[in-house]
Length: 418
Image (cartoon, rainbow, N blue to C red; front, side, top):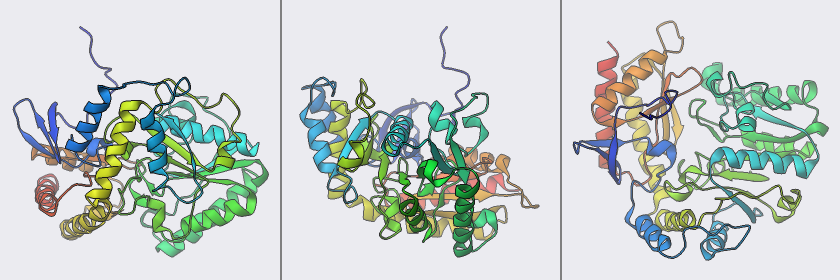
């Protein structure tokens, strides 16, 4: 009897049969408050009516128009609409299916455009599971162990994780930028470094926002050395952090290449890289393409997603409800020493669990996450040590649903922490 790969690890025992807004339902019609959003994908909630209608209409007109063979209007319209939200100057787009593919495409473009081999990534980063992206991921050995030899030419610089370093945010930024300068002086010479890849908020690495000033420091060094700054906004983009792009929290910083996926199409496979026409034009002919990239139905879903985000004010809602959620998480943590840190921005928040000796407590984080699932609240863990529980609800979440989640969360923490 065929079965799914036994290597796949399920975060919850739920078998979902339908979804509606913030909720998933199983075969017994039990309702679960979904604070995973398909790992940050369903930013407009499950089966938003406008997304569903756009998909239905498109599926009856054109399902697949392979975009190196023929163009289709949904692709062209999406490209025009993304120009309304992308940073100034990023006026060329290349579409793919997944975040990992987009990272690989950005890497290839950076090497072609600069003629340089090396890239710098940050400690705790996650960029995907394909071979190049895995070589660039340092959020845990599970993403790379047993896959070697991995792609060469990757150097790792510190990330300004103030809590882990035991420093103020300002001191952590100074520490991380000194570390980057050290890497450029000892491991990857500037003239051999094509790009710096950075998540504005570490995702799998533990939901750690880059403090103010850090991205500006990266931008300054990239400009000084002729290195491209690549922002991986796969999880943070499309309003997740209370700004349309997370890097907008760092005023004046504009990337050379921006990577987006996840929330782009409300659950349909679609990703993209954006750069200037001049930079994108430096890619070698034939290096960009793919069978399914820019699929017509996925593009229709993305267009509807953009409409919903704009018309329902979801970026502002993410900021407002994120503050409410963060306040509630901190109230729960105040009476629980095992919750060592609460952090994040917008609707990208996390609680870190540590033992009495200060060591990461992955077992407790897992116990709390499972206790929450038993109570009807779906969550995920993350972090290099697996000791962080993250909350990433859809951007349509209401204040009442935030409060519902916080009650279930508090109960789960109390049940697991004895």
